[in-house]
Image 1 (cartoon, rainbow, N blue to C red):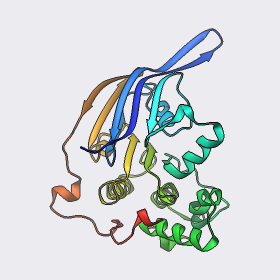
Image 2: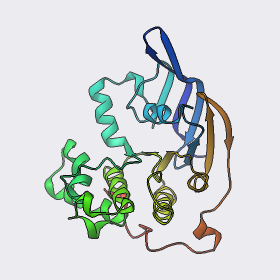
Image 3: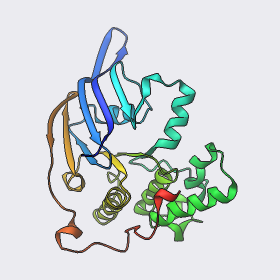
Image 4: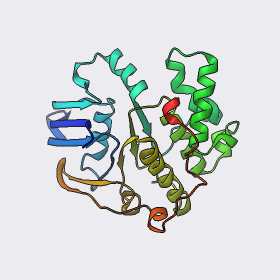
Length: 255
C-alpha cells in the first residue's frame, strides 16, 4: 500500500462570531494515500472547502493534527508555512484566479518568482507546465482572450509548475460547460495516473466525482461516507485514452 500523503486526526475547526460558535469541522479523521485521487462531496456548509484550506495550509485547525507529506503543519511558523505551500501545494480554484493584466505565461510563472531559480530555469519549468496542461500555444494570450476551459488549463499549469506533492482543487469544473468539464477532468486524471500527483478535489458534480478513485462525503463537518467507486474514466471504459489532452510526453516531475 502507498504511504499516506495526508493524515488528518481529530480535526475540529471553530469560527467565532461574537458569542456564536460555528463548527464547519468536528472531530474529523481522514487519510489520503500518496498518488490517490479523492473527491470530497457534500451539501453546502458541510466543511469541504474548510477542509481543503486546512490541508493546503491556508487555514489552521482549532484542534487536532494535520500532517501532509510527513510535515506537521502546526509546527511550522507563518514564514515556514508560506514556503512549504509554495513548494508542496498546487491550488486550483473554481474561478481560475488569474491575474488579468498578465499573459498565460506570466500567470504560470508567478509561483516560481518566490523561489531562488535562474531565469532560464523558470522558463523551462513554465513552458513544461504549460505544455503538460495543453495550453502552451496560448502562452502569450491574456485571460480575456481565452475560453473558460483554456483559463482553467492555465490555472492548472500554474498549480503544477513547482512540481507540488499534492494538488488541491476547489470545484475545478464548476464554471465550465459540459465539453470543457470533460477535458479538464481528463487532464486532472492524467496528472494523477501518469504523474502520480496526489489529488484532493471538492465537487458537487457526480460526473466530476466519478473520475476520482475515492469519494468521501461530508455532512455538517462529519465524514459520513467513504467509498471506492471503482469506475474508470470514459476513455478507459471505451478501451482508449484521449491523446489530445494527455501530457504523456511531458515530465511534470522534471519541473
